[in-house]
Length: 339
Image (cartoon, rainbow, N blue to C red):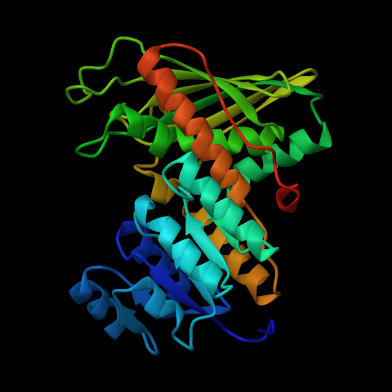
């Protein structure tokens, strides 16, 4: 397509994230429209489509991809459904923005990676939205420019006010820590080679069986050490921060997000209630950049390799969590397509 044409997007999955992406494409970003919406809940998807001019409702992703108005696909369905949708998109050579995870495990992610390689060109951008956050982008720029010298360590915090029903220890890694896995690889431009998980005495606010908080240690191929505090039932709000410790200085983001005030014997600021509010601008920028690149005939951003590597580190993290031991990360050789 030409850069002057509006991109017709099929949004697959219309739960919380999918519905938010439909709103984003319709109301926030430019250059795209929602041409199709897909969900196993036929009534919900029909109601959604009825409110969007020129949008068709489907219950089958492949049928939506065959819609002549569809130029690209945004996958926001549950992780276990991603592999089939991605392979359907590859069969039609359609560009894809796939919410994380690429797939829920390293073996299926590797199958997707190999299928994209067989096409001979990239088709997928993985939705690691923190790479599009203004603070993280500034930190990445400082590290790339060597402003503070060579990075030696990262200190991360990832706190949620509370965990949803049914949240498990494995989900602490696969749903929460996965973001620190990706930003660690991206900020340092290094693969994570080993993981340890320490489990202090749990908070009384955690549901039965959930070990919360946890402290996770990464080792990287470049010799850096990264620690992440995971605390998903902190009770007071949503906080994400990262401090890079370098040979010539440090740089920290996330602690003073928004307005900081002093008034009437009090000082402080607001803490965002959840990830959608904290990273709303990052989601907007991510989708706009994907649309812009797709209209130019390009693919940018996190790749299938990034999705596969994150899945492999998550698997090592869950093993480390279970055994209490240091677990090495196993990766295949990085293909030329992703170098």
